[in-house]
Length: 232
Image 1 (tube, one colour):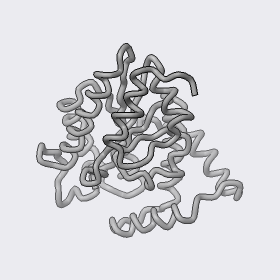
Image 2 (cartoon, helix red, strand yellow):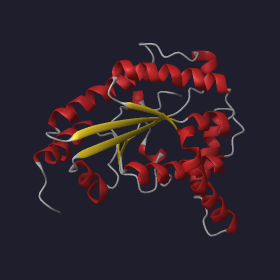
Image 3 (cartoon, rainbow, N blue to C red):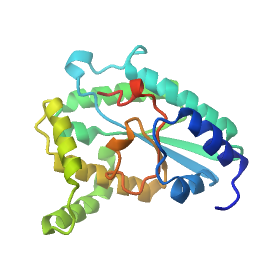
Image 4 (tube, rainbow, N blue to C red):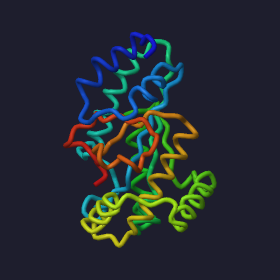
Protein backbone atom coordinates (compact mmCIF):
# COMPACT_ATOMS: atom_id res chain seq x y z
CA UNK A 1 0.00 0.00 0.00
CA UNK A 2 1.22 3.48 -0.87
CA UNK A 3 2.16 5.91 1.88
CA UNK A 4 -0.96 7.27 3.55
CA UNK A 5 -1.65 10.94 4.14
CA UNK A 6 -2.01 12.22 7.70
CA UNK A 7 -5.79 12.52 7.18
CA UNK A 8 -6.22 8.93 6.07
CA UNK A 9 -3.94 7.68 8.87
CA UNK A 10 -6.11 9.55 11.38
CA UNK A 11 -9.28 8.18 9.81
CA UNK A 12 -8.12 4.57 9.70
CA UNK A 13 -6.24 4.47 13.01
CA UNK A 14 -8.26 6.82 15.23
CA UNK A 15 -11.63 7.95 13.91
CA UNK A 16 -13.08 4.72 12.60
CA UNK A 17 -11.81 2.38 15.33
CA UNK A 18 -13.36 4.64 17.98
CA UNK A 19 -16.79 4.61 16.31
CA UNK A 20 -17.16 1.51 14.23
CA UNK A 21 -20.03 -0.86 14.89
CA UNK A 22 -19.11 -3.04 11.92
CA UNK A 23 -16.07 -3.79 9.78
CA UNK A 24 -15.54 -1.40 6.89
CA UNK A 25 -16.14 -2.88 3.43
CA UNK A 26 -13.56 -2.62 0.64
CA UNK A 27 -11.31 -0.59 2.91
CA UNK A 28 -8.03 -1.01 1.05
CA UNK A 29 -9.48 -1.62 -2.41
CA UNK A 30 -11.71 1.46 -2.68
CA UNK A 31 -12.32 3.29 0.59
CA UNK A 32 -8.79 4.45 1.34
CA UNK A 33 -8.07 5.55 -2.26
CA UNK A 34 -11.29 7.60 -2.23
CA UNK A 35 -10.35 9.24 1.06
CA UNK A 36 -7.09 10.34 -0.57
CA UNK A 37 -8.90 12.11 -3.41
CA UNK A 38 -9.31 15.88 -3.59
CA UNK A 39 -13.10 15.49 -3.46
CA UNK A 40 -14.76 12.87 -1.24
CA UNK A 41 -18.42 11.95 -1.61
CA UNK A 42 -20.32 10.24 1.19
CA UNK A 43 -23.63 8.56 0.45
CA UNK A 44 -26.44 7.74 2.90
CA UNK A 45 -29.72 6.14 1.72
CA UNK A 46 -32.77 6.68 3.92
CA UNK A 47 -35.93 4.57 4.02
CA UNK A 48 -39.56 5.71 4.34
CA UNK A 49 -41.30 5.70 7.71
CA UNK A 50 -43.27 2.46 7.71
CA UNK A 51 -45.05 3.16 11.02
CA UNK A 52 -46.50 6.44 9.79
CA UNK A 53 -49.95 5.59 11.17
CA UNK A 54 -48.54 5.49 14.71
CA UNK A 55 -45.72 8.04 14.41
CA UNK A 56 -47.12 10.41 11.81
CA UNK A 57 -45.08 11.82 8.94
CA UNK A 58 -43.39 14.77 10.68
CA UNK A 59 -39.92 14.40 12.20
CA UNK A 60 -39.61 16.08 15.60
CA UNK A 61 -36.41 16.86 17.57
CA UNK A 62 -37.22 14.03 19.98
CA UNK A 63 -37.55 11.45 17.19
CA UNK A 64 -34.97 8.80 16.38
CA UNK A 65 -34.43 10.30 12.92
CA UNK A 66 -33.41 13.65 14.40
CA UNK A 67 -31.06 12.02 16.91
CA UNK A 68 -29.44 9.95 14.16
CA UNK A 69 -28.93 12.97 11.93
CA UNK A 70 -27.41 14.87 14.84
CA UNK A 71 -25.00 12.02 15.53
CA UNK A 72 -24.01 11.81 11.87
CA UNK A 73 -23.57 15.57 11.68
CA UNK A 74 -21.13 15.63 14.60
CA UNK A 75 -19.18 12.73 13.09
CA UNK A 76 -18.98 14.44 9.71
CA UNK A 77 -17.84 17.71 11.24
CA UNK A 78 -14.95 15.87 12.84
CA UNK A 79 -14.06 14.25 9.53
CA UNK A 80 -14.11 17.59 7.76
CA UNK A 81 -11.95 19.19 10.44
CA UNK A 82 -9.20 16.70 9.61
CA UNK A 83 -9.72 16.53 5.85
CA UNK A 84 -7.14 19.25 5.19
CA UNK A 85 -7.55 20.61 1.62
CA UNK A 86 -10.15 18.07 0.53
CA UNK A 87 -13.72 18.95 -0.41
CA UNK A 88 -16.32 16.77 1.28
CA UNK A 89 -19.75 16.16 -0.24
CA UNK A 90 -22.62 14.24 1.32
CA UNK A 91 -25.66 12.87 -0.52
CA UNK A 92 -28.77 11.68 1.31
CA UNK A 93 -30.97 9.52 -0.91
CA UNK A 94 -34.67 9.25 -0.07
CA UNK A 95 -35.78 5.69 -0.89
CA UNK A 96 -39.26 6.78 -1.95
CA UNK A 97 -39.86 3.99 -4.48
CA UNK A 98 -39.13 1.36 -1.84
CA UNK A 99 -42.08 2.72 0.08
CA UNK A 100 -44.59 3.30 -2.72
CA UNK A 101 -43.68 0.89 -5.53
CA UNK A 102 -42.34 -2.07 -3.55
CA UNK A 103 -44.08 -1.88 -0.17
CA UNK A 104 -47.34 -0.19 -1.14
CA UNK A 105 -47.19 2.77 1.24
CA UNK A 106 -49.48 5.71 0.38
CA UNK A 107 -47.68 8.19 -1.86
CA UNK A 108 -48.87 11.10 0.26
CA UNK A 109 -47.45 9.62 3.48
CA UNK A 110 -44.11 8.91 1.82
CA UNK A 111 -43.98 12.37 0.26
CA UNK A 112 -44.83 14.15 3.51
CA UNK A 113 -42.26 12.15 5.47
CA UNK A 114 -39.42 12.86 3.06
CA UNK A 115 -40.34 16.54 2.92
CA UNK A 116 -40.01 16.56 6.71
CA UNK A 117 -36.71 14.68 6.46
CA UNK A 118 -35.37 17.23 4.01
CA UNK A 119 -36.30 20.04 6.39
CA UNK A 120 -34.52 18.25 9.25
CA UNK A 121 -31.41 17.70 7.14
CA UNK A 122 -31.44 21.34 6.04
CA UNK A 123 -31.41 22.36 9.69
CA UNK A 124 -28.96 19.80 11.08
CA UNK A 125 -26.66 19.21 8.08
CA UNK A 126 -27.29 22.22 5.80
CA UNK A 127 -24.34 21.43 3.54
CA UNK A 128 -25.75 18.00 2.60
CA UNK A 129 -27.50 17.29 -0.70
CA UNK A 130 -30.94 15.67 -0.67
CA UNK A 131 -32.16 13.51 -3.56
CA UNK A 132 -34.97 11.07 -4.35
CA UNK A 133 -34.35 7.61 -5.76
CA UNK A 134 -37.33 8.11 -8.08
CA UNK A 135 -35.39 10.92 -9.77
CA UNK A 136 -33.01 8.30 -11.14
CA UNK A 137 -35.75 6.55 -13.14
CA UNK A 138 -34.32 7.03 -16.63
CA UNK A 139 -30.79 6.23 -15.44
CA UNK A 140 -31.87 3.08 -13.58
CA UNK A 141 -34.09 1.76 -16.39
CA UNK A 142 -31.40 -0.09 -18.38
CA UNK A 143 -30.04 -1.59 -15.16
CA UNK A 144 -33.52 -2.89 -14.29
CA UNK A 145 -33.94 -4.38 -17.75
CA UNK A 146 -30.55 -6.10 -17.65
CA UNK A 147 -31.12 -7.44 -14.14
CA UNK A 148 -34.55 -8.85 -15.04
CA UNK A 149 -33.17 -10.53 -18.16
CA UNK A 150 -30.30 -12.10 -16.24
CA UNK A 151 -32.62 -13.48 -13.56
CA UNK A 152 -35.23 -14.68 -16.07
CA UNK A 153 -32.56 -16.49 -18.07
CA UNK A 154 -31.25 -18.21 -14.96
CA UNK A 155 -27.79 -16.73 -15.50
CA UNK A 156 -28.07 -14.67 -12.30
CA UNK A 157 -29.76 -15.89 -9.11
CA UNK A 158 -30.40 -14.00 -5.92
CA UNK A 159 -28.94 -15.44 -2.75
CA UNK A 160 -31.40 -17.77 -0.99
CA UNK A 161 -30.58 -16.44 2.47
CA UNK A 162 -31.10 -12.87 1.27
CA UNK A 163 -34.50 -13.76 -0.14
CA UNK A 164 -35.55 -15.44 3.11
CA UNK A 165 -34.40 -12.46 5.16
CA UNK A 166 -36.21 -9.99 2.89
CA UNK A 167 -39.37 -12.06 3.10
CA UNK A 168 -39.14 -12.20 6.89
CA UNK A 169 -38.76 -8.42 7.05
CA UNK A 170 -41.76 -7.93 4.78
CA UNK A 171 -43.81 -10.29 6.96
CA UNK A 172 -42.88 -8.43 10.15
CA UNK A 173 -43.98 -5.18 8.54
CA UNK A 174 -47.16 -6.92 7.38
CA UNK A 175 -46.44 -5.95 3.78
CA UNK A 176 -47.13 -8.15 0.76
CA UNK A 177 -44.02 -6.88 -0.97
CA UNK A 178 -41.97 -8.99 -3.34
CA UNK A 179 -38.55 -9.69 -1.78
CA UNK A 180 -37.03 -10.36 -5.19
CA UNK A 181 -38.09 -6.92 -6.41
CA UNK A 182 -36.66 -5.31 -3.28
CA UNK A 183 -33.29 -7.05 -3.59
CA UNK A 184 -33.06 -6.28 -7.30
CA UNK A 185 -33.75 -2.61 -6.60
CA UNK A 186 -31.06 -2.54 -3.90
CA UNK A 187 -28.50 -3.97 -6.31
CA UNK A 188 -29.54 -1.56 -9.07
CA UNK A 189 -29.26 1.38 -6.68
CA UNK A 190 -25.75 0.28 -5.71
CA UNK A 191 -24.66 0.00 -9.34
CA UNK A 192 -26.12 3.38 -10.34
CA UNK A 193 -24.70 5.28 -7.36
CA UNK A 194 -21.29 3.65 -7.70
CA UNK A 195 -21.04 4.49 -11.38
CA UNK A 196 -22.23 8.07 -10.97
CA UNK A 197 -20.43 9.20 -7.82
CA UNK A 198 -17.79 6.65 -6.72
CA UNK A 199 -18.87 7.42 -3.13
CA UNK A 200 -18.22 6.01 0.31
CA UNK A 201 -21.46 4.73 1.74
CA UNK A 202 -22.10 5.79 5.33
CA UNK A 203 -24.82 3.33 6.24
CA UNK A 204 -27.59 3.69 8.82
CA UNK A 205 -28.32 -0.03 9.05
CA UNK A 206 -26.45 -3.07 10.30
CA UNK A 207 -23.70 -4.38 8.03
CA UNK A 208 -25.42 -7.70 7.29
CA UNK A 209 -28.38 -5.85 5.76
CA UNK A 210 -26.09 -4.34 3.13
CA UNK A 211 -23.93 -7.36 2.38
CA UNK A 212 -24.23 -8.72 -1.16
CA UNK A 213 -26.92 -6.27 -2.31
CA UNK A 214 -24.53 -3.32 -2.12
CA UNK A 215 -22.15 -5.04 -4.54
CA UNK A 216 -19.06 -2.84 -5.08
CA UNK A 217 -19.93 0.07 -2.80
CA UNK A 218 -17.26 0.73 -0.14
CA UNK A 219 -19.05 1.11 3.19
CA UNK A 220 -18.64 2.49 6.71
CA UNK A 221 -20.63 1.61 9.85
CA UNK A 222 -20.55 4.11 12.71
CA UNK A 223 -24.22 4.44 13.72
CA UNK A 224 -24.88 2.98 17.22
CA UNK A 225 -27.38 0.14 17.44
CA UNK A 226 -30.01 2.30 19.14
CA UNK A 227 -29.97 4.73 16.21
CA UNK A 228 -29.90 2.32 13.28
CA UNK A 229 -32.73 2.28 10.72
CA UNK A 230 -34.32 5.39 12.29
CA UNK A 231 -37.19 5.25 9.80
CA UNK A 232 -38.42 1.88 11.14
